[in-house]
Image (cartoon, rainbow, N blue to C red; front, side):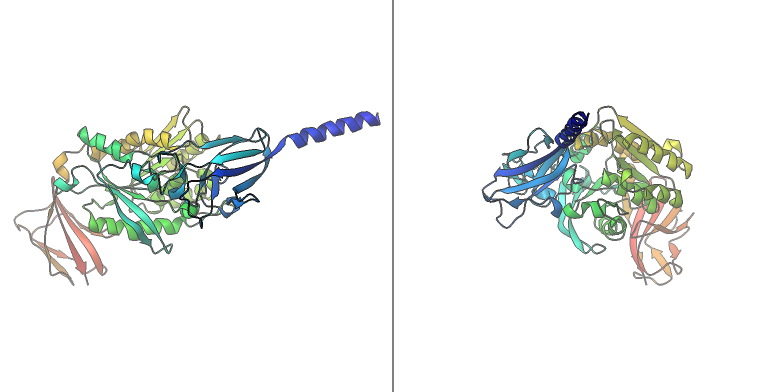
Amino acid sequence: MKRSIKLILILLFSTCFSAIAQVTFTIQELPSYTPSQDSIYIAGNFTGWEPGSQAFMLHKNLSGKWAITLAAQSSGTVIKYKFTRGSWETVEKGAGGEEISDRVYTFGSTDSVDVSIANWADAGGGSNSTAAANVKIISSDFFMPQLNRTRRIWVYYPPDYETSAKRYPVLYMHDGQNLFDAATSFSGEWEVDETLNTLAAQGKQVPLVVGIDNGGGNRIGEYTPWQNPQYGGGDGEKYMQFIVETLKPYIDANFRTLSDRENTGIMGSSLGGLISHFGSLKYQDIFSKAGLFSPSYWYSDSIWQYTHDTGKHGSMRFYQLCGTNESSAMESEMQQMSDSLIRIGFAQGDIFNKIVIGGGHNEKLWREAFSEAYLWLFNGYVYSVKDAGKVNAIDCFPNPVDDVLTLNLNQSTVYDSVFIIDMKGQQVKNFSKLFGNKLDVHDIKPGTYLVKLVKGETVMEGKFVKR
């Protein structure tokens, strides 16, 4: 009997032991130009796709090769991963600078993996840009005072931007590296520029798109309003303040935009979907449209209480998307959020929920849904008359002004509506009719403002400074 019990214990121990496996990745070949001072990291679904986590930095072994041994996992566990030099701008690429598929490893299949890296994105990938000619990088180091760091900013210009006097809606998007250019993308691009150029060629109206690069190692922090016990985070509110208080005023001052909330949207995927949800609710005076692709509602339970407590303050449109091959909870959480939005006052007709059979958590899913999401979110603008958005400039004086603003107008024209809008795009004063050419502005705070006059399809706009 004792021998039988001992045998059973040995078998149980062997089974438990064999169910745990470990792996060591060793980089055998690197591009010859790899900077000697740089470190190399492994990033994957087991790191939250953090490109430069110190916990997953490789170290040189006794043979002088970069290597890392991952913590033991149950045999059969499958992980996806890539190698970087600390950011997605330096992720590994193919020999010609092309995007490569995620590497895949199954624990227990082997205890060591030799790796060859053919190219890095910041070297071989740069010459293979796929960005359209009407996509520009307006700054490689745009300062973010709320976070005391800088960031690359992209702008997609509608094809007729240079040949018209029109003003355009603006869509703010996260993960700028992945929107327009395969050479800078992490796992393929969204093809936002190609999609919008195609829609424009079909006669549909398209917006300005502002792409904000993610911060590499700061991505999780910036895209999360709350901390997660495992992944940290919590700088999302500062990141949104940057967009609303710094970036949007700059874009509105330097580009021909329709700056009001009805013409301003925000969109992102994964954690970018989470921060888009948070930001659109927090700043309902700024945004009226939100594209929430594969939103990471799982990151913090605070999202549910925040949604309930914030409530509805204005009309909004929400486009939610996920695939059936994402996390097991993604579909139910998306439906739960839809129900939560309805409970706080949003109509079912203002929420578009789409579940793609077989869709994964990747750029392919988001790329293929982008056109539909844009057309639905910006429906009123997409199909508007092409010339309806034309804006005529007017002079304002005195400028700066103290109490009464005089507009250089035909005084016999009666305008239906007059709006005074601050540089955040927030309406601070309006007049239902304007007879003559003078406006009382004594009661608005000092600052820079836009004055917009509307009569039918005619729009007049000027800028003034209130002392």
